[in-house]
Amino acid sequence: MKNLQIRKLSPETPLRVTESLLFSATFTALDSWTRLVKEIYGYETHRFEVTQNNEATGILALTHIQHPIFGNYLATSPFGSFGGFAFSSSEARDSLLNEARKLADELKVDYAVVRFIEDNNAPPSPWIQNPIYSTYLLDIPSNPEDLMQTFGHQHRKHTRQSLRKGFKVKFGRLELLDETYEALERSMHELGSPYHSKKYLRTMASLLDDNLEFVVIKDEKESLIGGAVLAYHGDTATNLHANILHNYRADYAGECLYWNILEHYIQKGIKTCDMGRSLNGSGNETFKMKWKPRKVPLAYWYYLPKGGGIPELNQKSPKFQFAIWMWKRLPAFAVRMLGPHLIRGIV
Image (cartoon, rainbow, N blue to C red):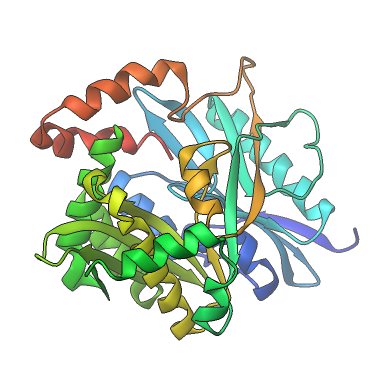
């Protein structure tokens, strides 16, 4: 392609995310997200830009992870589903992949992974695809009842039942930080997974500003039963974290939380809700599919400079089963102390 140029950006140079690349890049490509990862975990992000006729046609933001348990690697979209890798042509894509390979070789990492929306193309050699994740995109109508009518009969029934339970859902920012953190940390403990520190959420709110909201849900007695973190980018909103405590799931508190979030999106004029990634065939996927989203496969392309197999850093990996069992049984103080040190390696 004529006039195609690629350059590595200095830390001081802003990354240009054009309107055409915004959805694919997501909020994880923004400089504010890069600063979050740097401030909390000390990780450097290497950014590249492809231009044609002085217009950005491709971007790549690779974060360098170094962890004593989970290894030394490069990844786009740290702590997000996908993003940090966007392009408007195959030439721009391949130029960025070549830069990613060179950087991986230079830093002597175990592997590099780029995460983006599947474009039905096989990865160029030597990149390898690992098709185990999807994300779930829900088109948001302008009327809540139009949305309700897209659901199956049973899901409509459960959602309406949940709205009669007396649950209270509140949206806000730093005034909800403590409760949002408590709900998410407790629910992740129940699931056997570590969670970030409260400082992580506080810094995220500061850096993303109006593009981030916290959500809490309580019962009639004001007991905390769940929470969520919502990130906005363009006319898309991402359910970055959304969890309900186990004891309230039988009362369809998750349906109440999600429905209130979707109504909130309608009021804000959001066009698309990204419900976040899930492993194909998982229980999370089953819950999300009740809302009738478009299931969109995610392309996770790996470069393995040292050979070997694709790393399995997910809850279905057999090597993590004992760790998950043990984590659920640890006392809360230990979970809060150790959790951020573990999750910093699983981006």
